[in-house]
Image 1 (cartoon, rainbow, N blue to C red):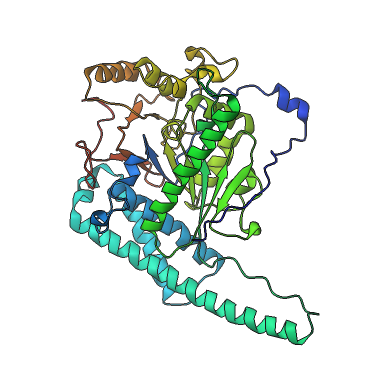
Image 2: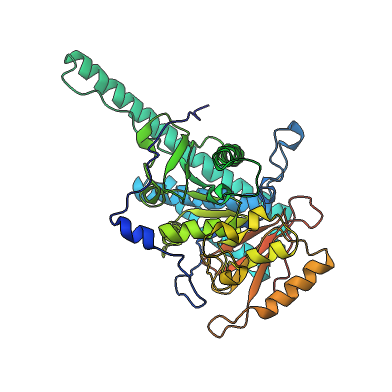
Length: 443
């Protein structure tokens, strides 16, 4: 199926000054840090369930409509593919005009989904159906154009290969080109690689189990993308913030189609999707700060022209995308898994109070922090959230201190152009509906 594993370089990124690496400490990003900026387009989840509804291997779900979250992801991935096409290899008319029209319409749709005045409009099945038709039409145009270019390239390669044979191998045989259309995904499981001293398994066994779980999670994501974007090849690689290595590439058996190290993966490989998975948010924050990965993520997912990877953060990946990491300390107080929310994995940062001013990436703007895995149906959660909101310090005089509280099946959709976000999902656990979370006043 094209998902063959290769063995890329597992060597960590080299530092020019080893001493500076040893002395480097946890970098505290205090309130007011100007590094915070909106992601172009981001999706924040408590769990994969918030995105995978309706996506199963069962026939009865084959023709169910996509959810709002799935349409958001599909549309924005198509936007990235379309912009790449227009920049790298502009097609002839009328295809070029069709692609430009799709970019304009999808930009307005993104703003509509995240604007307060249009939230309820997204509930209209007819509107969602029209949007799906538009998405599928542009996907098919891209697939057809790639097929045409591939056919021309194959014919040229065959002709050049014949010339090389006739010349007695004195002419180098041409190498096959890269795909004319491909979706590139970076999967980051670093949060799940956090050591757990309370575990019955050794550190080595923990790591092996975490790697296996990460590969299984990534395969589910690839299957979802194949359902959303049929006909588009998917290239995926796993990036570990711990040592900067890239491993386990799938989607091609050509090694040069993949990045050889982490910073290159986020920069020159030009990914369309960056997926940061769940785990220990404190370990994730620590590894990000040690390697300055926050800057790399911003460069990949938040660009002035609106072109950049779609960011998907799950659990810890959602928490780190918010304004402050302090929300991760609340889960332990509410009885959540200690191993996944234990700050003691970071030496020198074992006490919860030390995380009070640690900043996240700020993909939801300068005033919004993210709280995944919550349950506002319980009175204690309502009380806790109301108290915590009142305790949040103002941001540059802005008293609007929002907490994006996500249930397991909900998704927060963020659009940097409109600088707004909305939480979608059905409160009864069904799929396809849009529900707006009460971010300012817990209900």
